[in-house]
Length: 206
Image (tube, rainbow, N blue to C red; front, side, top):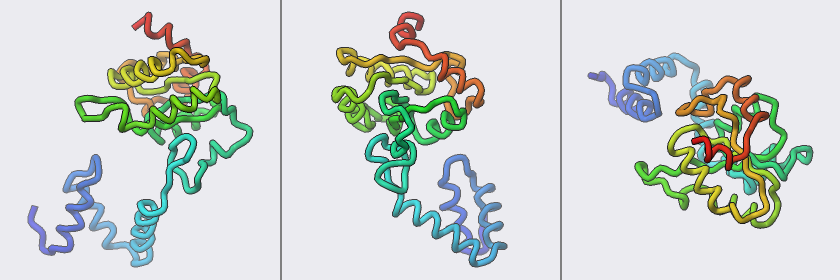
């Protein structure tokens, strides 16, 4: 792709580094930005800088937040003894959109994947185990995607806490095996949360 401007080329290159954005799409987006007012472009740039510089992670659940505790953890009406374990903020958003869950979350920040060099140490598993050992949690709901990596992560956490007094469950398999949680429709996901099954039972059936 030949460019008449080095500035244009640089902007297209940086835009194309985003996931799912090829060079042609990046060029279309950059040309669109060129047509916008200076204020519109400045607002976009400022919001991205603020995101990078000021965003925090909740001290309790590791969700993305503007404050020390996210809005969910700071809500006294939520059930702190019921914790849903998810991969990232997209899964929190998906479950919240169902309106069926009133507990708390624990965001792992990924799934165990030796192929990608992601082990338990790269995730927030240790802080979850510590919360369980403190007796703060009565039930853990494993809500990771139904993939090999998700199941491996569920099992690893289960083995870390199996001697603790905490119930473990997993979302019902209304979510097809191999599906990512964030792409499930709200009705299916909501029913999967409500109809969750004991985690030990999922081990026997798999």
